[in-house]
Length: 344
Length: 271
Image (cartoon, rainbow over all chains, first blue to last red; front, side, top):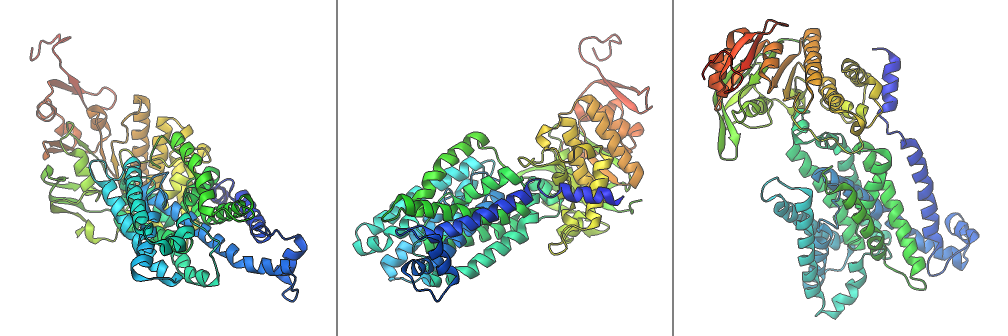
């Protein structure tokens, strides 16, 4: 085989628009970061922004506002990346184009556990929320998959979504039932319940980092095998993939990422769905590219939504969970119409 | 030339859930030959193929490759020897031909090494052999049924296995493309000595293209051997319940089954 054929194939196996999309995403990410630092209840100008970032000796009010916002920006980037990758993993594992932590009810499960922790066990730190939320996310994921796989045909997209919606509805009414009689819990958790990155601080970031790293590593390592799963379980078995084990590991990675993000920021919906779909539309179905790019696009979408929430809700702010639900719901409808619930 | 393998099923009984479809089937796949499994719908031919290709775990008995039970061989290692093209694999939305063919390289790759020169060569060679190099950057959705099937076979070829299983590779194709696919698979067998095992619906094409026939009836092996010896009107009557006469195919000299119905029967056979 001659070398031209080899190099031509190398070209063919990189998604056509990959380099363009990568550059565009990085530029967008930069803009988002600056916007997230600049906008808010008090908008700061370019000079103040630069002072805050690069001149630690300047003590103007604007510069200090910017410094205060850095943690929030970093936190929203991390949450967005985690939710984006989590969505990509869940869609690949279920071979279902509309799988997303919020649609499958995993976020609500995490929320229920956190609310229970606050109400009954006086739990109050980020380090404790995260374990509760993870337990809730994992148990809900198992439960939804269990119900969704009952009957003939296994876990079809439609059954999974119905199981997720039903579970989510039931669990959120439980959350309400627990919260409403307890006004202190309600106050503490009103913001959490909607989903907000405003609470992000260096402490929650340091709790988050290990989960983010482990989750993303799991995602990257399972990408080639998930590419095989995309061809159907029989073909994947023929290619030497242990489909059961792989699904378990990849789903665990997805639940880890969304559980951790939910614990710290509250249930933020649709990011996984939006991020992965946009990326798949422009670079195609190769998960080795989709996964890292979903991290980027998830970070971008969540940060933009947060900035929008701060501008729209001014002088206060609109929680990011409200904004993403507002953008996400119509897009979910579009995707469902286009896909006619076909499996990936 | 591909190495010789002993590939056998030893008394396998298998099925789905509580329904047993295969009963105590022991066969040995002739190495470096084309074998075709025939039989009526529901006789267990796909189940046999799937059990041998480790998609179904037999309830009893075992499948062995060179004397070793296949469930004892690490899956990736097994996938470098034994390839499989299922009957209806899933086409991921928006996938290109090159990407799909490239996925056949999975068992040869490790995470850290990624794609090597050998992988690119295997993909180029497989696409070349299936005459799909010109479509390499196209979306699968844009291709015709025959072209699509060639892409799937190219994916299985890129896997570069010594043994290749195909579950009804010609179903849903026009006769022209059925012949084209079977010719390409024969090329593969002649050129590399790849052992091919497939399930086919068409008895006459099976008789022409097979070196070895396995005939199943109600989940049991009823006959096996060269088509010229195996395909008789008696066997076809037993296996398919079809009255017929067997003539010599004027093109290949292989046996050819001519069905006999209640009408248009000038010989007045069985009427």
